[in-house]
Length: 198
Image: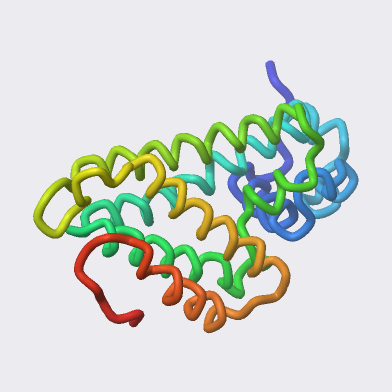
């Protein structure tokens, strides 16, 4: 019979999320986590196994929110509208006062050394997101969609470059207004009907 839990798992994951978001993966210690959650180290290891295992749970808990934002963007009609919806929505996430500024995954991956399993896993997740944008852009051919000869993969990478760039800027203290101005300057790079920066 397993040891009864002395804490709520969902609450623990939420507290760990805020801690990882603020300090990054490398900057968050087991001691930090046990203090934030309010449990002993043995209870921590019994419940989660390791810091890496808990971090993966945190990302898996948070990732659907970003996927939901991307899926809403994918329903837009032009590549420009897709990029606009995603980037402005992402800027709102990055500057949400309910958590530390920046992107949870990016805040955690940048300080990790090359070859670190967490860094490689997060890079794989970013690659999956980029592939979804590539596939969506590949569907937008002709009319007001993707012009002939435009590479969907390169356009998807451009979305990600802007997204990760504003994430780093947000972590460095850029305001939501400043991020939105940056996005407005970047949007003309996308093909499609011009829209306001609203």
